[in-house]
Length: 359
Image (cartoon, rainbow, N blue to C red; front, side, top):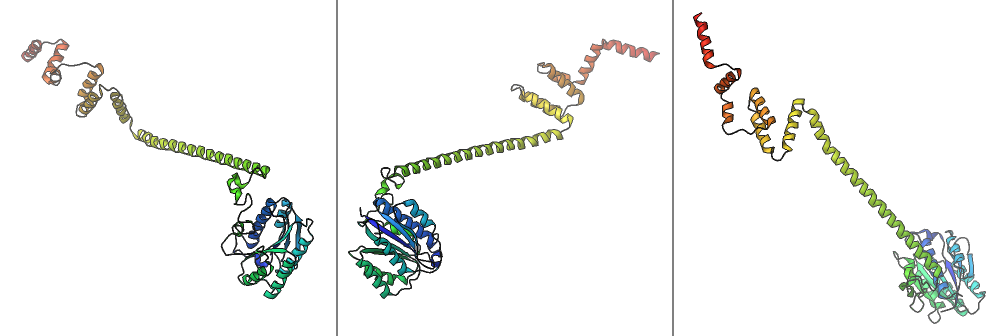
């Protein structure tokens, strides 16, 4: 792997408030810088990265060359938007910082993010490029948002380029800045991205090689397991809530069906309720269901005396022979039967009537 010292030159002028890149130009640049820092530190443990801003009243050095990833991320998060772009000053200060690097075996590289109009003309940029080339400094320029900067940046990169060590990356509107950098020469050296950045690390779980960073791989795995358990708990709670809701709905439906029946019973008179109870008791016996229905139909057309006789016969459960019902309905037969029961003979009754006529 290439041993390099890299300085990130970030544009933080007022133009970086624009939202043509998600979420803003500043946010997209910070994400891209995180990607570059991670790629450089992973490719070689001895690589160092520094950070400066080119906006505001003047150029500001945020972090000197270091291989501490935490310090670089903290410095990136502290970048604020202000002022105008100072491109030439920023590039010259970055070159000065690279010149005073501790490890002289490291190659020198500047990665500049430009999203504001560049005030310098083409001639000035070419002279700056030639000076950097003389000091063996490679420059990668990421240009976005301002089309007028493209010709100037092309001339600048052409002046500083030596054996294809410098590159110009133009990012169109609507494209994520980090996605463009992943496949660019800035990240993918010789067409191969570092582990965990979409290249060889794509075969590993979470994009991280456990052999390279076991602690990070373990943390990611634990986080994934916690998230899976949380989702399972939420799904179980949702199923229980849905089950309770369906049970309540069934109970309310049964109550609603029972309420009209109870209301109908309350509206019936006492005689109607007794009649309904009699029908239900007669229908409870399978063998007597038809007989009870027929008897009830006949009771609707009988007189009061006939109804009493019918009820007496049904209560005694007496099976009558054919023809008995006709005799019971014969008035003359019933009168003679009553006389016999009273012990009065027809001849005695006739004789007594004659005696009365004689007197």
